[in-house]
Image 1: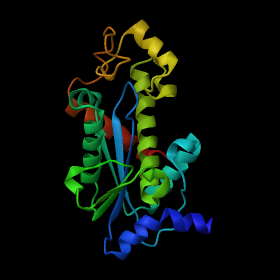
Image 2 (image 1 turned 90 degrees about the horizontal axis):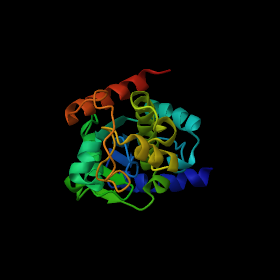
Image 3 (image 1 turned 180 degrees about the horizontal axis):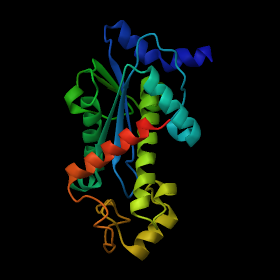
Length: 235
């Protein structure tokens, strides 16, 4: 365990030694789904943190992720969350929308980070103070924690959206292209939260539910922020 703690903090420690005090790990959840937002998180820890997470959030059971989520919020110096809606995914493409969500997450931090560690996501506004590394969520503690935060927030939002758009199994598939989800789109049509530019949605008919969800991007981003606050208020 001590060896794991040393390895997972190697990158942060090297940056701290170079004088970067506020190192933020950045990761996202939701690039691949057919529906819902992209959610990005930025997490900054104090230099004396003792690591408690050593693997990618997707390999952790949901109940354990929620426990880790609460611990991250309690021990981090700062946590920022950013969203990019399905409309923005369609307008920009999913990679650019992911960068936008990450920029919003960084902007929402109460302090400005000195340096970023990302899961191979390049953010132009931090081009000289960023380390985009493959499998960052397995090699950097801050990045791994950002992965957990983004995943927990997005899963909660998709569970809430499933109440507005029943019949698609969003509470289970979280918007990903499972067979049942794709069949539901073919049968019922796509909803306002589906990404029309994605191949498995493109060409399908538009379904109902337009009155269930805001039409504008601004109102949708506000909805996601409200859901984040609901999640944070939970015990």
